[in-house]
Length: 134
Image (cartoon, helix red, strand yellow):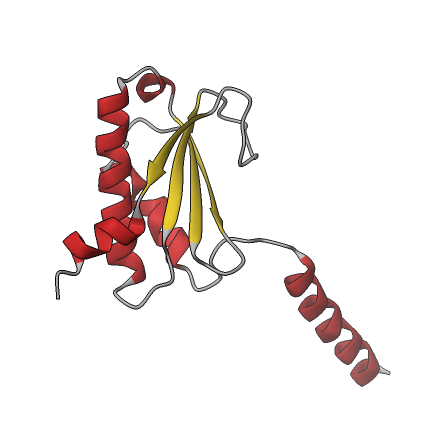
């Protein structure tokens, strides 16, 4: 009976792990991005990272009340810094092609498209030439 219970618990846990639908990288790299974000946006309050199904597109939604009102030039600069950092974390042989940094004031946001979101593109293909010149 104990063996049957243990087997059913094992399969339940495995099923829950696959059913959670988390589209962030399961290899821990998105956690490293999340933990390293403070180096680029030191005043952020929350972050949500979504890696596309084919891993070629990444959306990084950041709640940062102070940086939300920054100029477009400053946002572009931070998106480029973020893109370079992400490429260094994911390494040379990644599938990333394009992405977006989306800023919001809402620290409780869990959506990839917040109502007040300001989108700044991240050109991973172009940044790969800078980060990995060879």
